[in-house]
Image 1 (cartoon, rainbow, N blue to C red):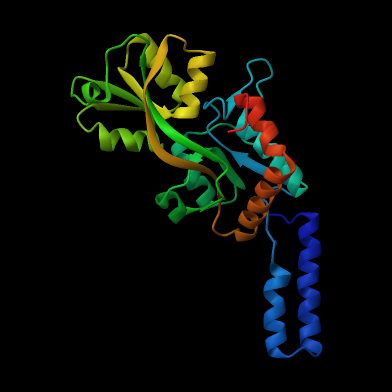
Image 2 (image 1 turned 90 degrees about the horizontal axis):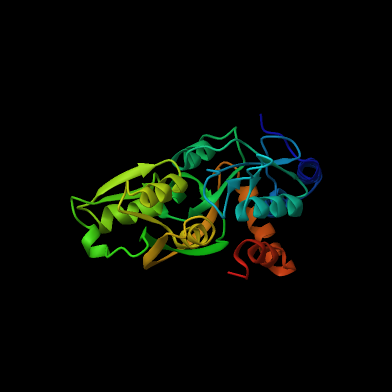
Length: 274
């Protein structure tokens, strides 16, 4: 059940007081002008005092599970913590779920406040949920075994199998630009990378920041053969029924840029600002 934060109770009280004053003597036009101002910034959260988040937690460096503690960690995890702090809330992470279920979960409501998952802002997603202002720029990439002679052209063949993560813009790009190849939709990008490493798949199409990180940290026997300038931007998914939260998230993202919080998180996970 949705709960209001303490700050929001104050806002609701202010709205009620404004209504009483309007009834006691404000003109109709004055009351109409005051109402939107009083409601500005009001939002609900599914768990009182908490910002409840969902993601696919197998998309490093944006989100992954710490092997020692079992807790979520990564760029998006730290961004969510900072967002919660700027909103005066505690962060609350739910168990990992498949990427292609995130938008429907937020749209249906009642389970989580936001999905933060290295998620590209697209028209299709914006038709279902609100997307925050962008906080990361990204492109796509094609990854193969190191030393491979494969090219984008040679991969577009019925004999080739391209691994992608289901529901992603990488999968969409492969469908559109490698129509003749077989596409294998997987739950995680780690499964895709491991499959290319073992020779099960010929290539993987995935977000460039992720492929760079994975090759640096875990898959040194793979290489990027093409960086695809798709000009994508990541955003945070929020229910259309909660526009005040979208506004609050956007305000917090702007504050994080101004106060250096975002730059510090970028340096932690990428070695420099993005």
